[in-house]
Picture (cartoon, rainbow, N blue to C red):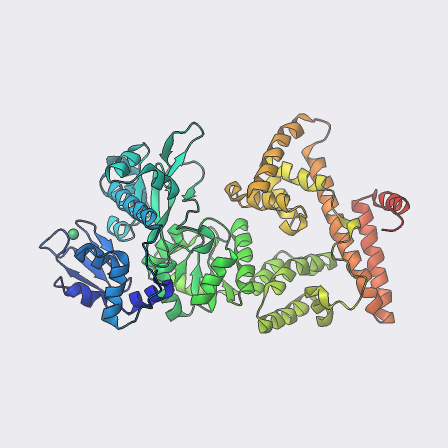
Length: 586
Ligand SMILES: [Zn+2]
């Protein structure tokens, strides 16, 4: 098989206009070229070559593809031959690597490509797709744009299977490609039903999967293909196949949340735009970005869920030594609504220009919420800033972050440095998570049960608690999924915890002896007591290193924190005493 990066090089070097021009008389129209279609033999200029995207498209017969596809479709070559032919023309030598047997995944690529064509035709022609066409019109996406983007429509009923079988595809292949699902009773049905289909391409610009958007109310709003031998959603970014060139040129990537945002920004004239595929940004995706641009601008919704996703992605990108900025949209706007308003491109560019460093954005939010006004507030602010400092893998960025946070939180730089990297802690007594401060999992559970009971409890809990406060990873995952309204993101363990909790909601509702208010207050008190425990533990570590003056101050601070903690958790002293008596060695 030919290595991916060589294929990429060949594609980039190829002059698509010249190659197509050998078969078609092309005339320049704006940034594209038009001519009569060589596939359906038309006489009008309905066939477009779009050099910026490295693709061709016919508005009549809908043949579409890149330089390799052109050779395959026009001259009947197979994929490797098309690559070699293109390479020969641009003067790139392709290394021979032993026997080049056919890729065993070829049938899957074929199945997905066939499905993409079929979905696209449904969107153009099927009466049932009216709802999808209206939806696109309502979002100001013309049918011409939809066609060039390869959008499609997956109908409600079972026609997909018959159509695919009619085109010679076997059920087993359709299942493996993630296009069909098998139910418990053995019947198979199309995975995507009544959805607007966004094709997902790999770096070779081949369609490998779909993201289907539901057009009426229901769940989930977006459904992605499952992972298959040709699609790993954590290792691919939506639109990267087109955006990567622009990313290199612009020396930046714009990261948005969803397919529609990508589409909108692309139409507005931004090409360096990508999106994760229905999950939080993964390490692999951060690495992909890092390969193509030194700087990422995060352009997510500005609501609470959007901010959490922003900062999670930000930390991941910092771990990959990228420069990370956050662009902030006006309240209530998303990239789509903003771009559609008058002056879309200019308005967006303005917002991108005002993007600020991810740590600075965190500080800004904490400042606005008044975190730096009080001592406990400053402590909590530090706890929220530390993960971002720790994530910064670039030593200079990390150093700048430490200085900035020391300044804004009013702590000594050396103290902060020790906190950022506890391994540097010169004391032997350091324990990462002292057992005495472990929160009873019951409190975590109570908070989740409250969240499951709906509003106003969900908002109250999200307001009061940071995800990091959850020490049981499955509960933390449930918390984040509930906070972001994305229960489909749960992994298996978390999903089981989620189900158990749901059952407990009924039980909690039936138990009349405790009001939700009381449950909430107690659980929040537990969490705050634990936070204070950690603060005390930190002071315990600092005392041996402090000067005499500082020791006195720290002792006072510790006393104050202990009093505050005991107020939150009155039984603490008793439990602690009992624990010491029972186990003198701990
Ligand atoms: Zn045509």
